[in-house]
Length: 489
Image (cartoon, rainbow, N blue to C red; front, side):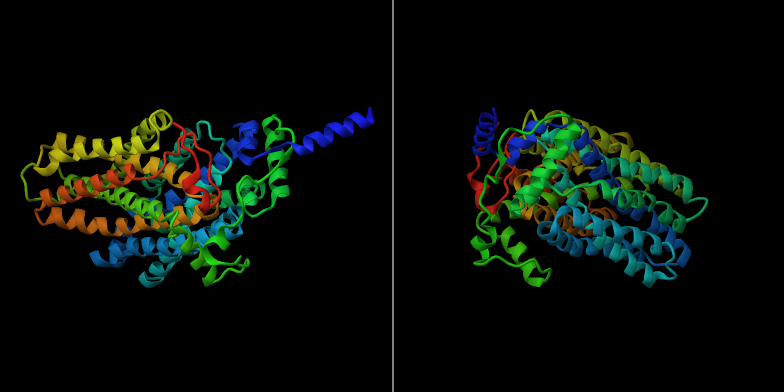
């Protein structure tokens, strides 16, 4: 009997299974719901911080007597900080683990949230807001972490559900601003908005490292332990046999000639940057930058166009929309945020049926069609409907790009790739106000709409030029395997 048991164990030892096979076996259950909740909370916190920009600028301008340029700079420095932060947090996550990255990220954000509410003057507020922007640059790490616990089946739908936490964050912050700003002011809004950050920091102790990251690092035993915990929580079982890495760990040798040691320095950051621009990833990286730039440019531009028309800033035409008073600002931001919900719902419905590339291309086309009639001034109702309709589809492309980007980048550079793409989008966020606001104020509505149309069309073309469809496709771990994986439709 003992001999038979030993023989059975020996046979099982000869059987091996990959990480993707393990994730499929343990399935989507209670464990992934917790991962979704924590990653979603991180996304909500970042959305809250971005949403605050809509309220702090006007309030501080009024209180401190700032110029319009000084008010705009409060937003600009946040986006500038995001550019730096995306690079920093991407390096940290890809070289030291997702868990270490978002733990440091949360500590930084909690601290900056609190001290920001005590800013004594404009200069100190600018400095602190830029530091907050650096913290916000770590947002893509949460999406990468969540993705790496997902089995291939229905992964797209769950990534869209994860994206809804951002919209929930914007809606909740708008509601909080409606209550707090008229009564207590912007300092209290900053302080109270830090509560979700505290919650995320406290819940950190219940998180675990991504098993996919551990496999890439050669820590197979640690990855197996986490997979076993997932199986226990989900009340499922791992496949029989032994976990193995299905891809060789040769990335740094392939690109740089030698394995870099784990020292966080400039050389490490340069290494990760070179990986994104290596021959196997160059096409993906450049196209992804175009897509993220186009999404952000269009998204923020449509919001600003809505604001310009609805506040009567566009006085060039008699059909400009009705003028709103300041007391309705918070309500308008809240209603505008609700317009994103249909885009998220449509994304969830089609992402697994049509695939990522076709879905994004279709949404770009529909978004451009909604903007096209605005080449010439329209009446109030039609203008509002067209802008809200365009925003629905652009939110859809934003959401699906957030699904596609972490799927197409390999694990070894996933956080860096998504972070830098997001940072490129932030550049568009800085450029878009100049175009949307200045052209409309200069009575150049046709030029503004034409520019948005060109950007959207270029983004759609870029989507179609991506080399692979990631629907149902196994996640790639190393750069050398990006172009070698089969595509499942």
